[in-house]
Image (cartoon, rainbow over all chains, first blue to last red):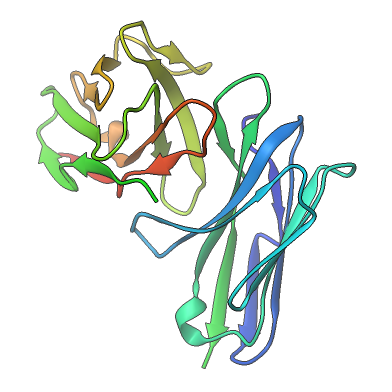
Length: 111
Length: 114
């Protein structure tokens, strides 16, 4: 299978709560990226973390990377209704230039 | 970040016709471009990788004769869906990258075959 796994597949939370999404991948990577996609629209790049980094912050986003476990997490703090979207991790694998997407997490933030 | 332009953003075509989608890197030269397909409520599936001046490498299960990819220059790749059928209706997204940098994505093309 191309895809890495993401969990949960779907997440429903109240506005103001934090949302955590996890991503696992299969082979060694150069970097991992998180994207957001609103329904039927293009991808919005959120954050890139390189294989030699363990944590990265951008505004309300916090990404961690554990290369020993081949996993990453995306934390959105103080969520807003406007954060409702699908979130995908994507990995750039060593030995090639492919970017492979995880299955995605559909986040719904209730106002 | 770099800009990748994809055109058209939406297209409706009749069954049996062919449709061409363009992907351009506007401010950098892309040594490699990628084409993805996304069905509703699913993730992006890599269809093929194209390198400028050489044949595309297709992922398993993707029909080469159905989805023709041309990467004639360092700033342009095209995907042609030949003899389109309703089951080809999907969201197609391209990405482009320079050597050893992250990929930049186009905004996608929604293809509807009627």
